[in-house]
Each structure stands twice: as C-alpha cells, then as structure tokens.
Length: 79
Image (cartoon, rainbow, N blue to C red; front, side, top):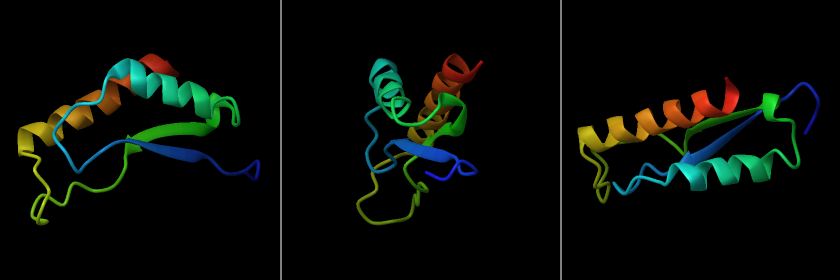
C-alpha cells in the first residue's frame, strides 16, 4: 500500500445475524497488522446493511449489535 493510504478492514458481515466473536475479529486485525502498521488500519462492517434487500435476514436490533461490536473492538484495539 502507498504510505499515504489507510486500509479499512470489513470484518463484520452485514448479510447474516450471527455476531462475530470478538477474539476472531481481533485475530484478523492482528493478521492484517503483520503487513501494515496498526495505525493505518480501521475496522468496519463489510458493506451497508441494505435492510430491504431480499435475503438479508438482519433485524434492526441485529444491525445495532453489529455496529456495537465494531465500536467495542475498535476501542480495545486503537485506544
């Protein structure tokens, strides 16, 4: 990656309600940090929630849980 670019890791799926394990997400961040400094990495859902899309089984509550997981892992990782 160019030195002036950051990488956003879309590690939280928006296509199914099952919540990722915090340890698994952190492990994947650690793996990415082997190739790029942690300060240049960020965490995000993999894409938008598109709650009206056919086949997307997430409720609004599921979506909030996913976003809360992103915040929780990010705070533990970057603060």
